Image 1: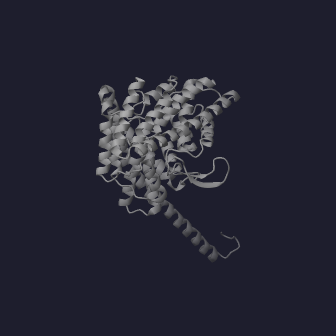
Image 2: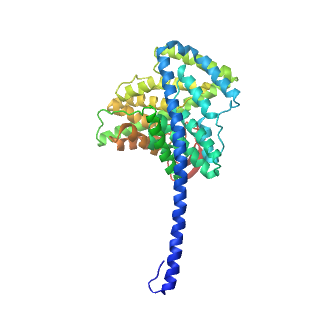
Image 3: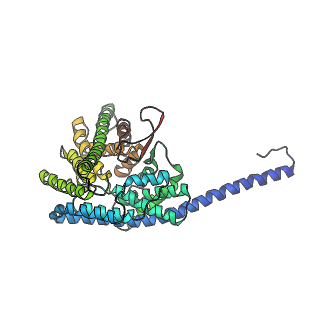
Amino acid sequence: MIRQNEPKWIKHIRWRQYLRKWRVFLLQQGRALVKWFVFSCVIGLVVGVAGAAFHHTVEYATALRGEHGWLLFTLPLAGLLIVSLYRLCGMERDRGTNFVLIAVRENEPMRLLTAPLIFVSTALSHLAGGSTGREGAALQLGGALSCKIGRLMHLDEKDARIVTMCGMAAGFSALFGTPLAAAVFAMEVVSVGVMYYAAIFPCVFGALLAHRVALHLGSEAPAYELLNVPAPALPTLLRVLALGCLCALLAIVFCWALKMGAKLYTTYFKSPYVRIAVGGVLVVLVTLLTGTRDYNGAGMDVIARAIGGQAHPVAFALKILLTALTLGAGYKGGEIVPVFFTGATFGCVMGGLLGLPPSFGAALGMMAAFCGVTNCPLTSVILAYELFGGAGLPLFGLVCAVSYMLSGYSGLYSEQKIMYSKLRPEFIGRKTRH
């Protein structure tokens, strides 16, 4: 601090000290900005290209399955091939997205082989009709690539964690086209209640760049138009509140079904080859019994129909069943799009019964279910904005808040930590129940 009554020579010394501190501060901030700008550019470009290639591959596999219905009957064979690939590469104990969370929290190195393996195995699962998504695969793809980049650059432990989060955000953004939600998700999902704000610039910039790269390479970002968004009057608030309670229960059921599916498979079929082959046969049989292929693959067209106001009354239950049969057996992909499918179809039906417009109910259910299974309320609200625009955003905030509070401590990822209680302000630091 410069004092007015001091001699000039003392003032001069104090000014030099003051300027020296500012120069050191600006140099530190400038170096950090340049460092993360460079890393974000590299990761955004690499993961953006990989994400676009992954998107086109999965889309092509889905289209090919639609043209050739007999590919569904190759699902057991595709499963055997997936298990063989992982065993050949020495990764038969792969933990999927959980390992990405461990890499961020504990700086455990991810093998680069994770990227091509999840790429190929997810494409095979979609080609043969497994009920699986792709965003979980995108998180693994981006995390593995960025982790390798960080190792090549000899980053220290803390910077390596930020680089992995940047890769997660870039992978999610490149595939789903929601850069802001992707960036917040990467910071929020690992330890709920503790945001890694040091990663905010690389995550946001890497996600934005990966999104632009993917768009330039032909990927399409999903966007939906909502019909008849109601005003937030008291009756509407009560209906949204009720739907949020139901979606919290739906999220618990979804997580429980995935857990029980995996547990039953491992209990009755010790060999992973037998397990995945039996799972493929079961998915084929259930598909034939339903008489429709709506529940195979990601089901993005069904989500679009639900947001348009049309959904089969039991579509959500069948999707949960087929997803549990697919992922529990060992097929690869992700859980997030099946959650979107489940939430959208459930919200369309239940929203209409509660007096909400079915289209808006589907959108609310989609976000509430996502929030309930990922325990990420901030991500859910931002995702609602990026997918549906600003219309009805306060109602999305309400339904996500209720779903987060009432969904308990279940979750898609067993390595996710809930740092604070959902019901009172106290530290708990517990892992989710998967």
